[in-house]
Every structure is written in C-alpha cells, then in structure tokens.
Length: 381
Image (cartoon, rainbow, N blue to C red):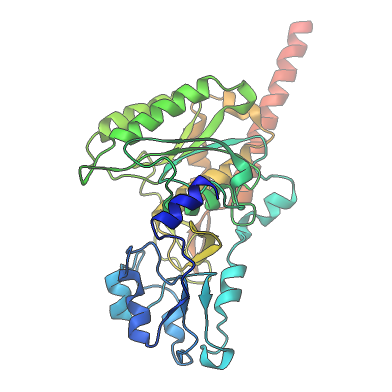
C-alpha cells in the first residue's frame, strides 16, 4: 500500500466500512455537517430507501446566490453536491427527468473548450502552477500531468485535502480540465497560521515557484499561476502582492490570490441566467475529481474553481504562440483580451469566450511574425 493510501486509512478518510444508510430526507440535508463540513457532503452513503420523487428542486435548478452555505442548504432543502460513491433510489423514487449519475457524467467535460481541444489546443507544452491544499497525487485525472510537487509549513507531507483535486481537475484533468495536456507544478501551502488567515507559507511557496521556474529550460517555463487561496485582508498579503509582481515580471501570469482581477469573474451554470456584470465562468454545475477517488459533482463551483479553469483556457490559447510571451506586459494584455472577447447575451450576461481568446492571441502572434519577417528583409536590403 502506498503512503497516501496508508495516510487516508489511518485518518479514517478511506474506509472499508459499509455505506451509511440514510433513512430520512432531514438526515440527507444534514450530511454536510457531519465529520468534515463542506468536504464529504453526499459521499459513501446509501439513499436507496428514500422517496425523492417529489424533490426535484432539491437537486436541480439555479441556486439563489453565488454561494449557498451548509446552513442555508438545510434551510432551503437543497443538495448542492454528490460523488460517484453513492447508492441512489430506483428511478421511480427519483424526481422526473433527474438522473444523478448522468448529471455527474455529463458535467465532466468543459463544453466551451471542445472546439479548442478538437483543433489540437489542449495546453500541450504549457506549464501551469497551482498553489492550494495538499493533493491526491494518484488520481488518474491529472496524475500524469504532475511535474513537480512540494508541501510547505507544518502539514504532513503525505496528507491530502479535498480542494487540491478540485482545482487540479479544473485546470489539467484529462476529462474535466480546460487544458488536459498542460504540465502541472503544484505547491501545497496552508492559509491558516495559528487559526488565522496568514500568507506566510503561501509566500514561501511563491518564492520556491520563482526559484523552480528559473531553473527550467525556456520552453518549459511556468506561464500561469492559479491561486485560489486567501483574501485581501490576510496577514502578509502585501508581501504576497510583491511576490506576485515578481512572478509577472518573470513571465508568470497570476490568476487569483486576491491579485488584480479578483472581482472580475463569477462562477455560473450555463443552463441558467447569469445576471451579474462580471464575466461568467462555467464552473457551477461542474464535475471534478474527488479527493478520495472517483468524481464530485457540485452545483456551486465557487470563485476558487474559476481561477484554474481560466488558467487552463489561457494555456490552450497560448499553445503554439510562444512569441506572444515576449510581449511587454503580456499578462495584462491577456486580462484585457478576456474582457473584450467575452460574449454577452440577455440570458447569460457576460461569459468567457475561449475561442475568442485563442483567436485574439493567434492574431497578435501572426502580426508579430510578419513584423519579424519585414524587419529581416529590411536588414538584408
């Protein structure tokens, strides 16, 4: 048995125990509160004895706000998440036209990147860094993409947490990611120090990222950093901003981390209306790898899922356009491209446009190539 599985069994995270029988809807709605709030939710449970046939609103439809807390889910009678490891009632005991397994499977593929992927734009040759919780290194969705992994602070180096698999799957998952062929450099760093939000270990991780990147060959340089950790009032956030500035000076675009565009994006479910003026990222109603194995469907992706999703899209858009990275302030240029290419509709509002981003980057790169040819011909005259 490998070290990760030994750790999981020792902590009681993985278990050979039978499925927990849930015999009432009230107990189903209380699941997020049990053991590890927000982490397990509807996982390794037997719901086969429930009659959910009149509970369609519990599992489908738009959510009332960007984030519905575990307390709110119980009050509103909403189930926001479930995994592949659930025993469901038979079809006639489920709401009409609701199949939770089909719902989960159909939400794996980020459909707005299908055209890019079919054209060969899969992030191949582009390196993405992520700073987040500890990672299950063996999940088949992204295990082959990992090129580097390090754990900072007091954390057990062999431990894993739920959020690492989610963000990695959004970025480089083979079936769930926007850049399934991108390389992943992963830095696990806690956000809490003595129970308070503190960037101490995140800042250590950024320094290590910069050091690691300097040693990489030019073609393998890290181009995008996704950081879903932290808020603008964290201790040490000013130092983080300085380090993020250094990343961008060294050709690494920072996405998230309360840096620059932190309020620009909002998760949404493409099946429902998006009424905000922010740019919608389709990570609500999305399936990602589950940290304990299998997959995890969530009706609310949260802001933290938008950053790795965007990093993957940008990896696809810049694949084969290495010349673009020689432009001065190219990260800010990409931020502007995201905004000006976003689509707008009465039904969904502003929405990220991966194809538009890729076309804009390709156009700029071709113009640069033409200018190089013109300059060379002038030198030869």
